[in-house]
Length: 339
Image (cartoon, rainbow, N blue to C red):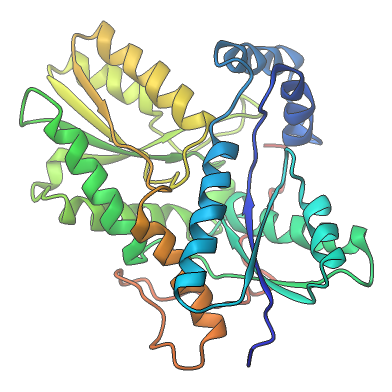
């Protein structure tokens, strides 16, 4: 291959798959973040309601198979691997497996399309750490660019939103585009908030939401120190206020989460849905898009940007510009205080 890449590495946040995996998972996620013990216990209880299982690992297994098939159909000889930041298969284990398989150079796709310290830089740093732990014989792992406005993400999300809207008994639903909240300090120093807004606008347009008053951005899954301001409004708080204002129906699109995970299941399917029910509102949640063939084709296209000399160029629907393959050293800096 002209580029020298031999494999694709899918990198995700990870999640527990059994009750005895919940505590180690939460310890990895919160290491160094000074999360109160009672908060960890509360989150552990939430996992217990789902049998200690997050949906994300099952989704990644299916995605690995789909990407393998997509690459084979495209005539690619690239192998596909998968590693998580916080739950088995852990990145260090996967990088060691790649080394043992003779992989010398790989491309990593991160299961978040957005630019921020939490959704991009931390992943890159964890990949670097995993390679350092494996040692000098570890493969070189380069990272695929952020891609919040790729058509393989936008159009499937629009179609899933349209499906959710069609399930509601009224045609005047308010649409909430939900993404993971960030500390305001972090959000001010990266393009995350602007990218989420642009992705939502592109999805809304393709889902037929011509009235700007019908949709808005909300945030979810805030954690950390209660005195640190995070992006608002929270999705459940907003659902409650809409109900009090007389809104009859609400649909939520998890625009920040292309891959199904526990935060979507809890924050939207449990908490937001319960707030809607208490307010007497109709509620629908758009499905995540990780099992859509166009999403799988998007990953193949992003790989082709780096491996195919005849590739026509980056696919992007928005106006914010295509991010570079290699992030600048000062891109998406970390927190200056505990989050």
